[in-house]
Amino acid sequence: MHSIEPFWKWRDYYTAEEDEKSPFYGREYSEFEFSDKIYNYYIHPQWDNFGSETLYLKLLYVDYKKGGAIIEFIGEWNDCTQNDIMFLKREIVDVLIDNGISKFALIGENILQFFGDRNEYYEEWYDDIKDNDGWIMAINFREHIIEEMYQSNIHHYVNINEKYNDINWRQYKPHHLIAYLDDLLIKIID
Image 1 (cartoon, rainbow, N blue to C red):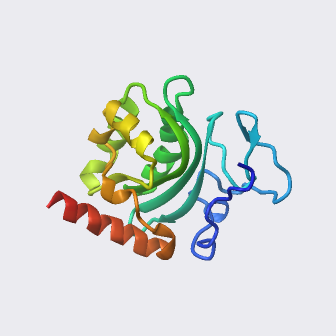
Image 2: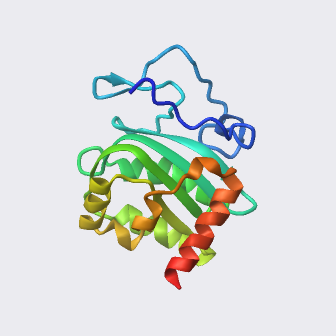
């Protein structure tokens, strides 16, 4: 797992550690010192810890004018024992919402397991953004993760659809990806 690096080709467009509004503002990274682990496996030092012991993320892009954010994840999303959604909502999402973000692209191809629990935080997140034409979209999540999300009724708040499971998001510039996802969501709703 230490060789799985967050997507870095958008660093010319955005870096969370240089964004004064970001929860990761001022953070310094090492390319060589591996300190964070998921279970007994070290992960690449570019991933950000937000309070979870098993789930890490990278805030890849934020566009305050268009109100969109792209977040990539790695690890195990565990709401049952780790309360990951609480940490995500309070430490990351609330900060972004307070700064005008209402569209969230969650990239989950490196999420290995999902354990759902209650969905109050997902509902709160959805309620916080719905009046601003906001959305939460799960992109490239593994099939068994999506099944668990459906069983946990998260699909009422997070857009989960098989059409979002095979998006080659790396081919886009980040602002184009947000526009593409916005259009894709409108087409599916219609």
